[in-house]
Length: 63
Length: 399
Ligand code: HEM
Ligand code: HEM
Ligand code: SF4
Image (cartoon, rainbow over all chains, first blue to last red; front, side, top):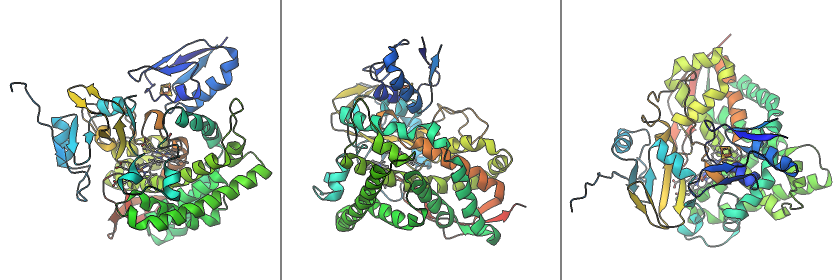
């Protein structure tokens, strides 16, 4: 199963991933990213959308 | 009172002589992370701009722009109040989700050979003269024709599109109210263009950008024809003048840093870095506007609900606290700039703008040496969106 890895040195908390895949990524009250590394297979499409849309390309999928 | 108070600087940001790259602004930034202005507060330093740009306590400050100008109805008003830029929360996110896939960097890459061919065609037309008016001869046709390539409009129609977009742009200027009839007429014409495109792609969907938008579907949800039309007009409006201005500012920055131009000529692979460096030290969008949705305290400052907050891009991108060596350096490792804004309203078209400018700049550098001003340049004011209106330059053709 694939897991999500966000490179925190790149992530700039733009929150575009949370718009694309709200079931996996969210922004907390301080405007900082929180996410689940594992996700339901049915969400793969939206996770890939989140990867594409991240302005700094900080999101990766690992096997 | 015995509380120690830091002197908070004051900036008159709508004074036409107000300059971003000035001693006044550098001194203000040295003194304090924010300044008071004649229109809300201005955030000057990198860390604070970065934080507040993405703060859930601030929303898009531009929604009330027509109302500020006494405009409460008409085509422009209806379009403006329903477009992605000013929508918030789920209304914004829903549209953004449906638009995003068409802007995927993987799809934009396919357009690169066309961007290169376009840049070379434009350069061919002036290179033997040893001079050009860089905005008229390169930046404007390049920025506009990139948009027609993206949208699949015949490239020959770019002058019409450019004229309509500039007319709509009057809506963001101080003479908005007087220009309202012209603005509304231009919005009507852009609507017709967009509606024609949509009808055409609905009848004959292909692999192109507008077809992707027409077919965009998420869990059964789609863009209505009206939503799609509004979005296409926003792309034309938001993508053309910005790219034109940013290319003009790039030329200005390289003329100040000739050794960086030579480096780019030798190393075309630095095109992407060139774009980032230019947008960090010389961004066209000099501030992004936000509005406080609730009362909150940030550091030493109480911000009342409704306060306008300007996040300064050039000032943050050259803040010595974040960039000990803020000079342009294509080989340096610098933190990201906010020339494309940030947070939920982060520029939707940035992959397009980055791809087209990072092709244009190294092609220019590899073909013309020693670009320099020849006089007669004219500039937009520094407030809001800046850049050259006319930029006559001379150069030596490289053999
Ligand atoms: C795509 C999205 C953009 C939106 C929504 C947007 C929004 C705004 C808004 C609402 C203002 C009003 C200003 C204020 O509160 O002071 C503003 C300032 C301005 N924006 Fe943008 N902007 C966008 C990008 C652009 C683009 C693409 C242009 C032009 C090419 C542009 C040009 C301006 C100008 C000229 C001002 C006037 C600043 C002044 O008061 O002198 N903006 N922008
Ligand atoms: C160098 C060129 C460009 C610059 C400097 C630029 C800058 C910006 C900035 C600063 C914003 C954020 C405005 C805010 O938060 O108030 C923005 C938003 C936006 N830009 Fe760009 N832009 C450029 C090119 C483009 C292009 C080529 C397109 C379309 C093809 C585009 C479409 C948009 C849209 C639709 C938004 C609104 C996004 C939203 O509110 O969710 N921009 N742009
Ligand atoms: S979109 Fe990218 S930068 Fe923004 S929060 Fe998600 S991972 Fe971080």
